[in-house]
Length: 209
Length: 150
View 1 (cartoon, rainbow over the protein chains, first blue to last red):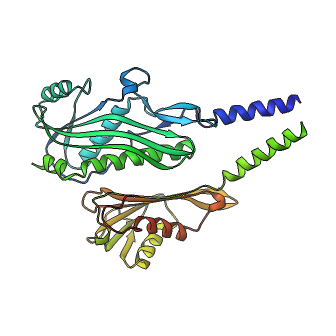
View 2: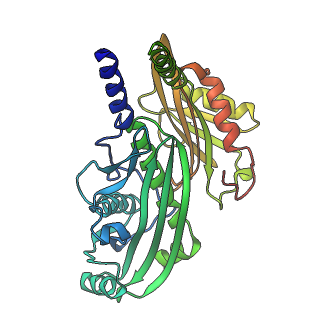
């Protein structure tokens, strides 16, 4: 009888928590390839505009949920320990360097247009890329779903918008796997979304002209 | 009591065995990509791959009526419409089997990934590498028209 109780409680514990606890994904090393080549200076900044981060409900390194056996959620964090936007900025900057640009980082305190404008003006670079992340999280139970809301803007040296492209929605990325597989699926989704945001004639023209 | 134990054991067996049958097949194509216009391909070998998957992918593309070559160099030796990259993952269960194959189509100039396909098959749903390649490429080129997002 005691053995049965032990078995049941162990099974319950494994079912509830299982592989759901302590998951981390690496967006910093995501290998983004952009549909353009160019040259010159670019300021690059990524801003966190996720409501649950701004409210303090989640920390900036929160990147999604991994659910246990009964759907009970556990937070997934960045592998680097950095904020999501910092990891995205690293990856985006690397991609732009690979495309031929000299990249400098913009230090943007909030998604408020005035804050963005002032950060851009302070950097003193003629062309700037700002990615505003209003939503980015994966939610994994039986399937892996990505919730995203991204705004990519090309800004002048004064912080005026030259071109923008927005993408938002929910997308099933596939079945849930182990942590490593989920992490690689999430990074691949990030690579794809960023590439698609740039693959817009308005964005490409704004960067080339 | 005995009945509860049997029920628990059956549930556990069911959970463990169905976990071995899991398949996923999906493709994601850039809406602005025109796959119809792609005729020539170069399949670049995935560095860790020592099973010659690049040659199998090229063979399947040729069987589909395209013109494809493969090699170890990441860059194509001559101009092509698209570079194909891939990642294969293998697992052991009695024998080694391919658990996952991801195939990407990229712009030769910028390396931009405009189409991707993926097949994931756990042990009891396993298929040969040739069949995995066939189903992934089949899914990618299923619409073979502009703007198909699956």
